[in-house]
Image (cartoon, rainbow, N blue to C red; front, side, top):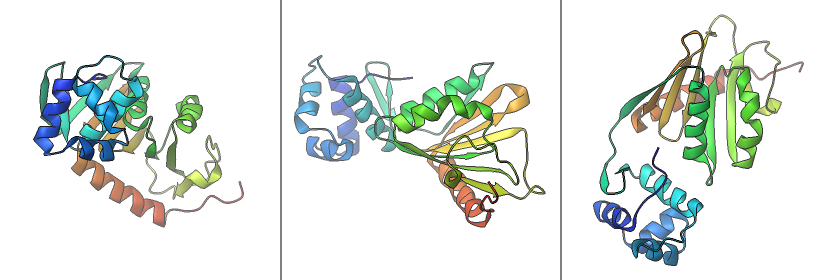
Length: 205
């Protein structure tokens, strides 16, 4: 996962987007002077500032390759395997939404969500969760939940929807399919919003 960006890459990315330094400053929330220092290859740039730039360019569909390459982002599918697959997914979630915050939409989260509750709050990440009707094992505040009727609820898999990405977790297979696609994100978010509006508000909890 790319965590650094060079001054040359920053200039090239701006050129691809037709952005001035002021445009980048406005979109990233960083001071103009920070961007100027980076583009002059100064080394005392904070990690949080570099992270903000990477996220800004990522939202504009720009990818960075190593310490030299810049390209337009293309849809891709990533497979996370093994016992630490969920840990890798959460690393991606916090990298994508951390610092600037955001929202994650989760269908059928498993019990491991509790381990990330404090980090979600610390990174200003809000969440909404769909769970099975009657499930009162709430890890988050009640207001974050809606119930799906038992007859339509599907156990054994989870869906995570966040900032241009969709992840499908198969519990029994120890595998997560992570899709990097704005189109997939928009479609799954639209479906989640429909289910959220028609789902049951938890009662007697």
